[in-house]
Length: 104
Length: 417
Image 1 (tube, rainbow over the protein chains, first blue to last red):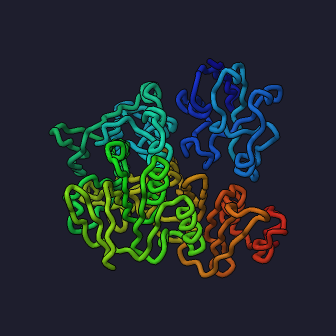
Image 2: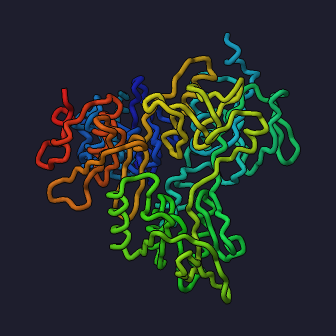
Image 3: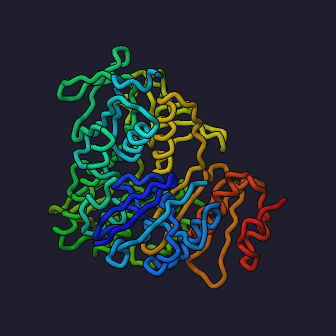
């Protein structure tokens, strides 16, 4: 079981719990604003962009090549960017804090 | 208060797939306070369709893993789902619909997200053959899986070498089937891609031991002792325990005709997705204007369904949105990820950008003279996002640099000032 906190672009903190599935699915199932997951989680739409809290990067690891490429021209990309459809929920993510990225 | 925001109003949505479901949630977000009722004849809780021919077919995951929204989300948003229910009539003068069970519902706004159904071509014997499936719904996939499990020889013939046919072929191969794809045209994906892309995918399937055959016009399905034989115009015959039909779709137009909507290649809508007063249409069923390409088009895609649903929701809530999206698509076959952006129709030049030391990572750029129309990116998300930006901005591309793998693959380097 992992507790994951999403900070929305309106600065609202939403803490959710899950034991499996993708972080994107968790957000969509709970209507976290700004996380759409239009492509269903296959890294094709970039509508699940989050910034990992810098000190939590160890939990998530860095973005993969395809994530970086998908976000390359995004004005809001930074070194903490991830597409959260590529983050699988596990105990290792317990306590994770994610800032929902602004959209271009 | 605007009448659009009245609690007494009812918005009825026919079709609860990508377009209908996204529309319902967008409408709530836009401030609609009245009832929202979604009808769909599919009894399964609304799900993502793209995985059906891919991950859903090859995994043992339940459809619950692929839901568009959770049950709680509908409840929280006050969206009423009526599944397994068929709408039989629209009475536009009375602003009401009738279901096949006779019940009537009044509406103030009606949204047609009626989608399409697979074409079953008029091939002799196809309608009476055993184990013939199209692939459009979760139930179709369940039947295919079951039939494959029960088959001992697992010989599958796929009629049609488009995306659905090819994705299904790749997935069934992964499940242990012997798969033959029969394409009527001289190359697969002929309608949607350049020959370079057809060649790549033909080889990809060949390398994965799926037999892809072109110029194969199926004229008959014969039956011998419970086994289907697929017969082609050239005399070739293929035994099939299972037949998958993937030759395109027909838009569901029956209800639109009843409502006297204008129909061309789909339900004709304006830039706000409106078909006529109090009736909107969204998703695969629409024939809509694309401002970027300057013509009416019909698209079969998640992008179009989602974007049009947002446009219609905003319009119904009194805003004046203009639907103006660059179309994008994707396809996953084996471990190859294909991402497409733009519309290549009308291209007169194709450039291939290769990457040094990579055989399965490249991109195909479609131009009409100097104008970039579309990009197909194979395992190359960077080409896809660059292409998206260039098309949107109508950038002039330095074509020499584009095809030079030593030239840095960066927007600044490729755009001509």
